[in-house]
Image: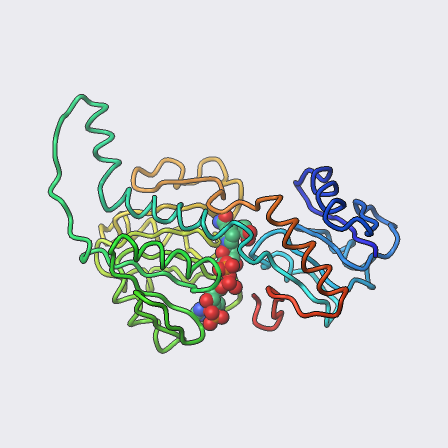
Amino acid sequence: MKITFCCTDTKAEPWLRGLAAALPAADISVWQPGAPQADYAVVWAPPQQFIDEQPRLQALFNIGAGVDALLRLRLPPGLRVVRLDDAGMAVQMAEYVSHALIRHFREFDGYEADMRAGRWSYRKPRLRQDFPVGVMGLGVLGERVARAVAQFDFPVRGWSRGAKQIAGVRCYSGAQGFNDFLAASRVLVNLLPLTPETQDIMNRDTLARLVPGAYVINVARGAHLVDEDLLALIDAGQVAGATLDVFRTEPLPAGHPFWSHPRITLTPHTSARTLRDESIAQIAGKIAALARGEPVAGVVDAARGY
Ligand code: NAP
Ligand code: GLV
């Protein structure tokens, strides 16, 4: 079996070594224009030329959870696209969101500023029932985040396309559940895939429907959020602030108002990193299963967009 590797901005050598160790019978190489036809591909942001030159692929393995960039390419109909299914990302996302939420709720930024200024001062404890957390997207990552946050006794709400039941989480679904979900959430965590339906979903209208004093944690994709609308609502005092890990343009362009906004905390798209060893084990296991004719989890529905 032939496997081709085409991952932009990724050091190929350790991946090739890991895949070769997990699949000793496979012939694995880095793709170059004109390379021979492969059976399976391991990809991140491949060029259209790669897709066009590899029509015999049985499956395309994306080394991330989000497939929005991949689905913007012209893919042959019927090509199986497989996303990473947790592979160590869910626990990272749970850590990141819990950290951002607790930092905001407990006002640790304020305490840090006070201590650095030599001030020993207390703030009035806030009530966690006043900080209901709404998680948009209850998939592999969102469900783990919702469960983690519920462990700290915050009221937790969740929103997904299809109806769900998760212990400790009040679940809403579909367009008809969206307004009630927003009205019942103060801290909004975004873990939706980026699709035509979800692009710009955090805008002036939707963010204004959150409980006043809202806080936004965006860990999915930058294009889910209308930047100017968030800034306007923060400046108007309706939204208290935001923690943002993802941006419309990455790296975030110099001079963007997010860089210097005192109420916005930024990280460089790092909330849940692809962990190489876990990912290789998962992808190799799935390639072996497909080669035996067995089904695998994490196959993307291109029509749905995730
Ligand atoms: P997933 O398992 O596919 O879950 C997606 C969830 O979103 C599902 O619950 C789905 O509902 C819901 N959903 C999709 N479209 C919807 C819509 N129109 N209305 C309401 N709910 C909708 O995805 P995941 O693995 O949790 O990953 C989520 C996203 O996180 C990825 O797509 C990626 O963009 C982002 N991500 C970011 C980082 C980072 O470092 N910042 C790392 C990894 C992933 P159903 O359950 O009903 O289908
Ligand atoms: C990272 O953003 C991913 O989609 O895995």
